[in-house]
Structures are given as structure tokens and as C-alpha cells.
Amino acid sequence: MPACLLAMLFPLLAAAQTAAKPADPDSATLPPVRTSITVVERIQTETPATVQVLDSRELHATPGITLDERLRQIPGFSLFRRASSVTAHPTTQGVSLRGVGSNGASRTLVLWDGIPLNDPYGGWVYWNRLAAGEIERIEVLSSASTSVFGDRALAGVIGITSREPETGEFTLSYSAGSENTHDLAAGAFTGANRWRASALFHGFTTDGWYITPRPYRGAVDRRSAVDFVTGLTRLDYASATSRAFIRLDVLAEDRANGTALQNNSTGLGTLAGHYMKQAGPNEFSLLGWHTREQFHSTFSAIAAGRNLERITYTQRVPSNDTGGALLWQRAGAGWFATAGADVQRTYGISIDSLYPSGTRRGGGYLLRHGVFAQARGTLGLITGFAGVRYQEDFLSPNAGLVIGRRWWRLRGSVNRGFRAPTLNELYREFRAGNAVTQANPLLAPERSFSSEAGADIYLGSTRASLTAYRTELENLITNVTLSVTPVEIIRQRRNAASALARGLQLELARRLGDFQFLAGYLYSDSRLGTGTRIAQVPHNHATGEIIFNRGRTLASIGVRGYSMQFDDDLNTFRLPGFTVFQATLRQQVTPSFAAVASLENALGRTYYTGFSPTPAVGTPRLVRVGVRWQFRPH
Image 1 (tube, one colour):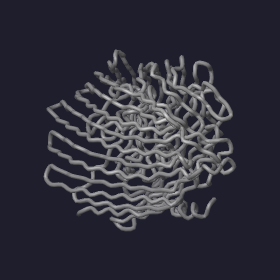
Image 2 (cartoon, rainbow, N blue to C red):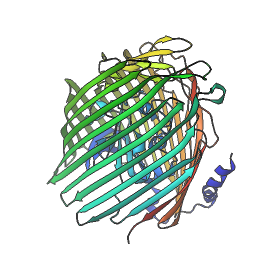
Image 3 (tube, one colour):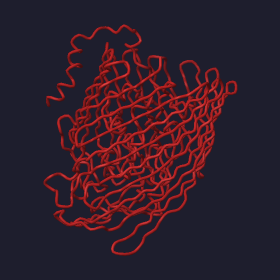
Image 4 (cartoon, rainbow, N blue to C red):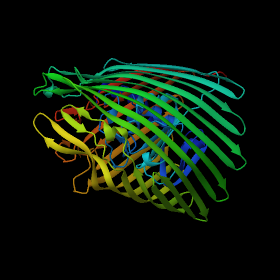
């Protein structure tokens, strides 16, 4: 084990020998099993399924440059490929949960304070828009067991809630590390009476790493690197019966995609607002947003030996997105209900300049709109759930039943859903190395029927959940291989006739004194109707983490393991399984000043993330150290 890992973990290992009973009795207990997910602020929707929660302490205790790396501690969470969003092309950053799979476009909706974070054109997520230090909690629902969220939540929802800083607070953080990585963030928060204003800045740069293994590299290969800057301004208002915010966030990023001629850049901005009013037992919420984006990318063909490269086309994708939602919520004696309507209009067009000559264009508009209702009622030990959504002439009902008390419960649910293809799937062609994936304007919506059953136990310091699930899919949109030659692979997005994802998920948590032990496991058997496995889905995904928190010290060690998976629909390219370890240490030196250190892929494990057909590898060993200054007026 590297000496730097031992040095970072020494405080944790030493404390394990002398851990004393905490002074605060509540610190020995865990939060109970969560059964609701936040839509926006106090608006929630109840669900018979379990909702996994990462609070700010757990986020601080998990290393990762970007948020998706920290979320990998949740079994079943993955991007389209194994690569981190630090080096992955943005179009491969779509989210998959529970082995349903993704193809660049997420089948999972990601909300940031109630505002969709998914790219309006392609459905992927720019994870670098979010700074982990400014997040209060993340809630993950790995199923479509509620009707509130619409077709983009066919496989589940990830809800991200920003932390509420104190008036007069200032923050400044900086870290540096391997591969010439530098990360700078700053925030300022002020306010008076019922108003509060905030501004955040985040800048990041890294030389990155080679994604092509050394034995395969040629003269065309370069490090895969990224530089980005984000900014956010927000104005909040709060009274006894109403709350509101208006927010503008922007992103500018440039990426080198691993060769001399392949790169991409993105510029986007989102203006969003929310107003919530409480009127007696009723709460009303109004959301609205508008996003504008410019995406640029270059694509090339690489000769055998990887010593020659030529541009095949450059791509420009302007897009915009406008949407809104109206929600109502009310709680009564033994019952709870949420209802509303939403609408979203997206425009985007892919403009490709072909080499040596020619132009290719494709795009248009998408209009989504729906109405929904979700409710639960409790009578004694039994709680029933039911909901329905009507969207684009498709009816999506769900129902569930829970039997139990505070310390135990048995649950089951069924739901029917669909997902409309994105503009990216319909109209945009792309290349990954010498693998070309063609668009398909004739794609039909995906449809699903899901069921799950499980049990939860909560004993104060111990929490456990077990879930068995089954999802039948019709018209699954996947990348179908049309031809394979030594110099080029041709694929096209097509609807598979059917697919089936089924599996078992286990979550365990135990708090013992100053220590918290977390473990998770997902077994997933996801196959197309032909019997071949769905690409990018391993049978097994296991995680474990030990968190030590005493006084001013927060430290953790963690592990993630994946079994073998395939990179393509023909199950030709096999990606072997792998295991990686990570660690982090955060020491509060003074009430305002903290020192932090993190270690990712501690043993320097080389693992494959894809074939194009040349293999690509994932994140190497990364070490980072930094400081955080947080001034709070007292």
C-alpha cells in the first residue's frame, strides 16, 4: 500500500483503537429509511420505494473531482461508460441506475433545486456545474415509482439540494494535485430582512491523462484534459408563508478528447425561478426555466498504428429549452397528496461541416407536457400508494403497498412508464475513435413495466434494505452494430424489440461510536430480447465505506468493485471487472479553516472503459491536497 495512503489513513486507524462513546447520544443513531423525494424545497412526493440519501458529511467524506465520482458509491449508479466525467466526452455522461442502461441520454432525471440538470438536446448531464461543497444533500430514487417526474425519469430520479448559507458568509477553497490539477472555488452570501443574495465561482484545470494505454499509443495520442469555469448568482426571498428564488448559472468548458485533432467545448446558461406559497394546509409551487447552449465538437478518423489522423467533420449544436411546472401539495390525517402539470419545449439542430466538403443538418423541436397526481394513505400498519400521469397520449399509472412499523416494513410496487427519444438520438451522428454511431429520426418512444418488492429494517444504529426488481422494456433505444471492419465500426440508434432488467439490491449502514460503516451491492441481469446482455451493465456492483467523524476530524476509506461487462450490443468487446480504493481526510484546523486531502484509485489500478476498437482506460491514481476557508459571522 502506498505510503501516502497510510499517512492519510493514520488518524482514522489510530482512532479505531481508542474510539470513545460520543457525548451526543443522537450521534450514535442513523436517520431512518427515507420514503419521500424532494421535488423542490418543501414540495415532496411519497413513494413505496426507498430513497437513498447522501448528506453533506458523506459527500465531504467521499473523494472525487466531480459529483458523479462521489455518486458511484451508490450501487447501480454509472455513466454511459465507466469513464469519469473529468475526461469523458459530455455526450457519454448520461446516468444509468439499476442496470437499465443508458446510451448517452439519461433514463434518469437529475434535478438541481427542482430545475432539470439534464442537457435539453441530448439528456446527458454536465456534472461540473455542481460544486460538492455547496450541496446540502442528494436523494436518489432508483425506480419510476412516482408519477410526478415524467418520461425523463423512466429509471429514477436524482434530486440535488443546495445548502443554505448564513448571511454574511464567505468561502474560499483551493486544491492542487496529480496531473497538474488545480481547483479554485469562492462564494459570497449576504442579505437583510427577508432577502438573501449569493454568488459562487468555480474554476478548474487539469492536464488530464492518456486514455489510450501505452502499448496502443501512437503519434496522434494526447492527454484527455478539461478546463472549465462556472458561475452562479441567486436571489432568495422568504416569509412566514412564501418562498421564492431566481437563479442564473453559467458554464464554459473546453475539453481535449485524447488525440491531436479531437476536442469539444460547451457554453451554456440557465435562468430559473421558483415561487412557493402556503395557504392553510395547501402548498402551491410554480417553477420556470430557460436554457441556452452552444456545443462544439470535432471528430476524426485514425489510421492503423495511430500515427495518422484526419478530420472527418466538425459539429456545432445550438439548442434552447424552456419549461415550467405547477404543483400542489396537501397533507391530512393519514394521507398525503401531490398533483400538478408541467411543460417543456426544446429546440436543437446539429450542423456538421464534412471534410473535405459538404454539410449535414438535422434537428427540430420537442414538446413535452403532462398532468399528474400522486397520493398515499395510511390505515394502521398498512400504507397504500397510487398515482397516474398523462403525457403525450401515454398513461403512466403506478401503485404500491407498504406494511410495517417504524423499525420494519415490507413493500411492493408496480408502475408503467415511457421515454421519448431525445433530439440527439433522432438527429445527431457522432464518432468515438473509429466507431461511428448514426442518428435515426424514426425512433419510437421506449415503454416499460416495472415491479419491485423489498424489506427495510431500522434499529437506530443499524439500517438495512433489500429490494428485488424487474423491468420489462419495449422499444429500448440502443446502439445497434451494423458492420465491423478492421478500420471502422458502424452503429445506429435503433429500437430493440424488447429487453429485461432484473436484479437484487442490498444496502447496509451501521453507526458505532465515531464510525459509520456503509455497504451496498447490486446484482443486475439486463438483457435484450435476443439474450445478449445490455451494453455497459455489469452483473455485480459492490461498494463499501468507513467514515470516521470526531471533533474536527473527518476521514474515510472506501472501495468500489465491478464485475465484467460488455461495451457493445453484440457482446464482442469484453471489459474485465476491477476494484478501486479511495480515501479522504478533512481536518478542521480552526473554526474557519480546514485542510483536506484525497486519494483516488489508491493502488493505481488500470481498468478498461471502452473499445473503439482501440481500448480506453479510466482514472489513474490521483492525489489532491487543499484548503477551505469559511467565514461565518457570529
